[in-house]
Amino acid sequence: MSIPETMQITSEIAPLEAVVVHTPGLEIERMTPSRAEELLYNDIVPMSVVQREHQVLSGVLGSICECFELSDLLVRALENEAARKKLLDAVCREAPAAGRRGELDELLPSELAGILVIGLPLRRDSLASWLEPRGWDLPPLPNQYFMRDAGFVVHDSAISGSMAHGIRHRESCIMRTIFEWLHEGQELILDSDRFAGRIEGGDIIVLREDLIAAGISRRTSAEALDQLGRAMAVRHHQPFTVIACLLPDDRSAIHLDMIFTQIDEERALVHAPLVVGRDAVRCVRLDVESDGQTRVRDAGQLLDAIAEAGLDLQPVYCGGHDTNHQVREQWLSGTNSFAIAPGKVIVYDCNRYTLDELSRHDYEVIPADVYDHLRAGSQNVAIALPGVELARGGGGPRCMTMPLRRA
Image (cartoon, rainbow, N blue to C red; front, side, top):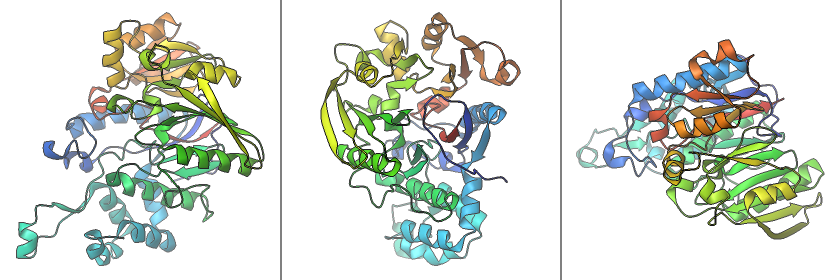
């Protein structure tokens, strides 16, 4: 297996060259209805259908760039003894996992990589353990295929997430291990052990090498964005701007990319009620100089704030112009699109009013399973990904992809 040689993300839409995905596995089947909400799901999802839909996504990505599977990268990273020890130190820091450390130390890298994602059941070898209601010493990670949150790249800097929910902490540990292995032991610019606050990749939209839009949400704090802005400016010796959006405390808007994603040089797919409507989110602009000095001010609505920063984006409405369709399709991650190149964007096929709106903006809608044969055609393409069950998991194509490099 080849490995990613470089990381570089200075745009949300530049041609994709390398990306990481995780194919959903047994961790999906180990989620029961009674635990769905605790595991941040709206409902349980069938593994076979989710896998089939996800394989179409992987097929599209594999046809245009290097597409790496998380489990393959994790196995390679765990072959390094120092990386393995550091990851297990983090995962087994507290009971009950601490009591299973010896067993985990004995596993082959491929076995350990699997256990870290699909979970380690409670060993019922005593009366006390037999009566213990807890089923797992290491719970499964059904959110692992939402790659974006636990790790992301800004410019040439790898960042491991500081997750808002403890049940996802192991995901960020896994991504940090992979990033450190890829960076040959160099320290990450920021990681979950050193953040003052919480941060997840779904709240970070890279608009330019010196500009990001970011959500302040249930998942990402203002303290973390302060830290990220200063780190980027100082590291790259140039001013850096963060347009911070104050997202509502609502499950439909857990991340910024659930209401806003850029699709080409001139347009963004948006959830109109929160981006251009009377209840549009308020933004605050943070400008950081190369020496770390900062200025903060109100910046109005999101598209206005981005335009003031030099990038004029016109809105394309998720769900079209009918309010009922907008709300329904935003809930099904209709706004959570993923650009593989300017004007070539992956969206769920279940969001038909969003696809109709893209058609009205001169996008040719193409089924994902034939995209490889037609990719040289229309300049603007909406690649319709089968994703009814993936959408029920609570994320879209952007959530499921973690780009390492764009042209």
